[in-house]
Length: 276
Image 1 (cartoon, rainbow, N blue to C red):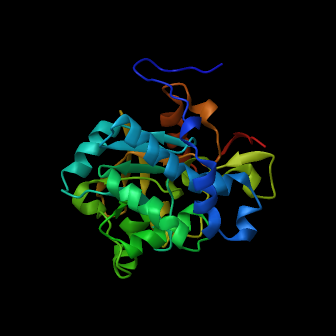
Image 2 (image 1 turned 45 degrees about the vertical axis):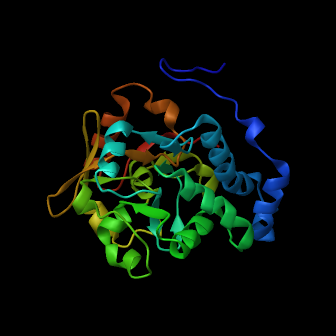
């Protein structure tokens, strides 16, 4: 049964899927990837569907979040981004060659349209690769949201021509993947051991694992806050819960308790049976 929260509207967007155009968009997706999983194809197609839906609804700004993302205080985040004076498509990067569309903000739909038009002309291995390529191709259209990886080494991104919001300037972070994996582990389907979930997972894109381990991620209602080793604090507007344990986090106190447990456990904590 579908549950629609108060103040929300469910819209079936199947009508915005154009199979002919999707075939054109996917021409650039590496055949070895395209034939492996429908996930990789739909991850690319969603940008065209999102663009067409936004156009039909007359949306001038909007967020898009993946299903395994916990988002916090999005109106505040939109205001903070707007205060920078930047416009375009905002996407978190965890590497100069990888943009993870866990949470996307668009305040210039034309930028998303340019990305969709550009896709059929390129070769790419995933939606993450495609967005990163386009960001380097057209830095006026794509702006990197401040992530843990940008906080740790902003020059790595700016040196290749990417535009990114500096965490120190805006005071917030958006999680590409690493913070959610540190707190709640990774999807059991991505590893060989599947009996239990453990947190404190550090993915290969984190430039400075020691910095992450020395940081403190706490709950300061109504959202998490990361306190870096230098003492500076950053609002965290989303956590990418890669381990898919969302059902265990529905109670209001569940996430704050998990953050406390994760912070106290030097070697990580078991957080329950894995979803397989």
